[in-house]
Amino acid sequence: MSITENLKSISEELASFPKVKLIAVTKTKPIEILLEAYQAGLREFGENKVQEMLPKYEALPKDIHWHLIGHLQTNKVKYIAPFVYMIHSVDSLKLLQEIDKQGKKSNKIINCLLQIYIATEESKFGLDEQELTELLENQDFKMLKNIKIKGVMGMATNTENTELISQEFGNLKNIFEKIRQQYQGENIDFQEISMGMSGDYSLAIEQGSTMVRIGSKIFGSR
Image (tube, rainbow, N blue to C red; front, top):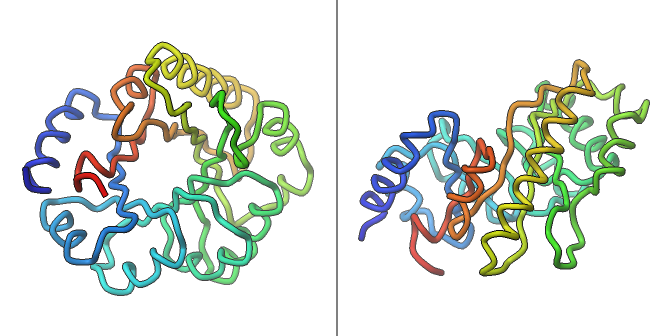
């Protein structure tokens, strides 16, 4: 099937869930393939690496919303701050402070999601619930004016066990609801739960995902 046909099939599937946005994961895909996806109507593109996102941003139409979904180092923020639509993978106050600083330079407020660690496997990235609470209660966080926390992001364990995956997604939804009720502030506007990829997005939607990050199901396996 072509990219257009794949997209049509996924869009039909998502039509029953009007709150769910499709983020096309474009990592490793060349410009011409992304252009095909653009021509098929896609406007939300997700990249894992800053160095891959930059040339694609330069080459492609400017009405694309670029989402940084991979781990972001503080020294790379300045390159994407002027144009990035949302950063899904924020996992520290230090990173938020840098995003805020670069947002100020670009005269814009940058949308961010806090990455929460929900999987059973070892991972270097993501906040646990206690770290999340500490971050949101930190006075330095409350001073940030050029970021907006739009919600949370998480990745389930890479396993065939659908029960475990559903449980992890359910945990993220619970954390989201708890935080949404407990914390208000000028830089907090909890709306989005970014969870679910090509292999598990149906389970994520069942558990309340509002953003699914799909790559291979659109573009084929790498």
